[in-house]
Image 1 (tube, rainbow, N blue to C red):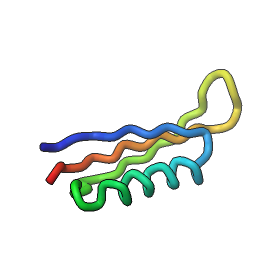
Image 2: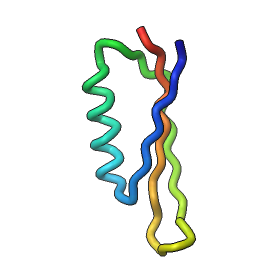
Image 3: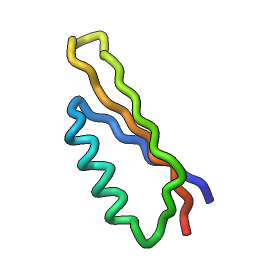
Image 4: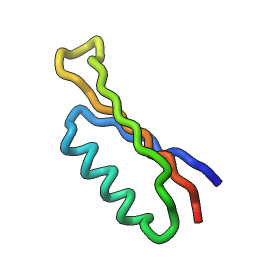
Length: 59
């Protein structure tokens, strides 16, 4: 079954670490289909924020 996991952070390094941790913890039970990243600027601050969506299939 195809599923998604969403991540959000104000720091590109932190979101990368979160995604890598998720992938490592689930390495034996998922197959990654795609990973999509985007940035945006929240209206309440000037720095950008990161979001990512990991699309995966459960094994």
